[in-house]
Length: 82
Image 1 (cartoon, rainbow, N blue to C red):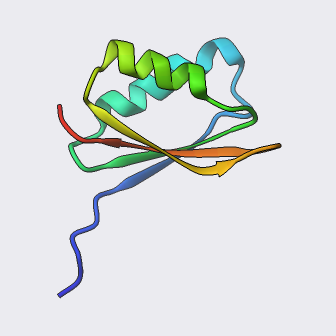
Image 2 (cartoon, one colour; image 1 turned 120 degrees about the vertical axis):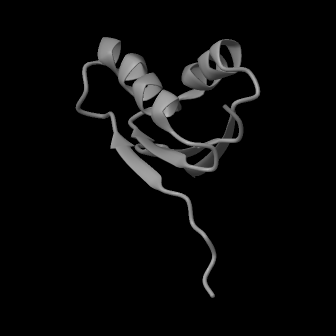
């Protein structure tokens, strides 16, 4: 029998105005069940988002770079606990 894959939400924020990006991302993250992931596509390194997640949702998410620039960054953010 196959593995029980959790859902992955794709979100490309490159066309979203910068001030709206983090609220939209946090809206998706807060709706994820444990084990589910958000794959985020951005036009710059989203390291400030990483620090904000660590501060506002400590221990709730894992962060994994999938693509690291120079023009596109993709990050998988996985909920590890509620």
